[in-house]
Amino acid sequence: QVQLVESGGGLVQAGDSLRLSCAASGRTFSDYAMGWFRTAPGKERDFVARISGNSGNTLYAESVKGRFTVSRDNAKNTVYLQMNSLKPEDTAVYYCAAGRLGPTGYAYPYWGQGTQVTVSS
Image (cartoon, rainbow, N blue to C red; front, side, top):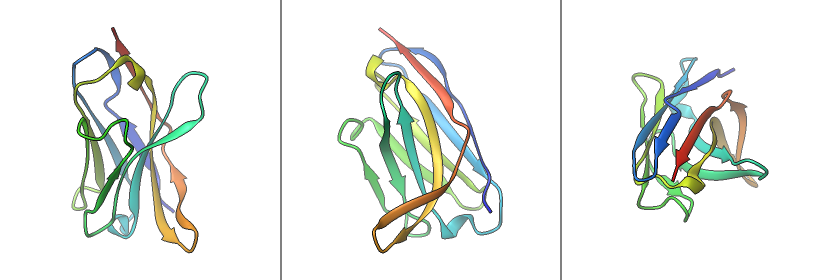
């Protein structure tokens, strides 16, 4: 069982930066890939970024590539999402999730409660 708690959201202006954090419980944090997802108003949940457990390999959605950076500190059981050059279209509830690679791709059984990010123009 993994419990996740996000923090760091808020209201910012376009062009500003925010860093989201996601603290995980449990002693096997490094076994899990960590993903960031977001749900914008009226839209479905979208993938934002992923970082693997130990190798640190990352993957980003095209919409955030070059602006967002995902990282993790396995000693602190925490994953981060550094968001720079924020745009109004980044406004969403951001969720972190813990998962593993399975035969059909990554599956994320554990989710945080989400943190709101609002970017004003």
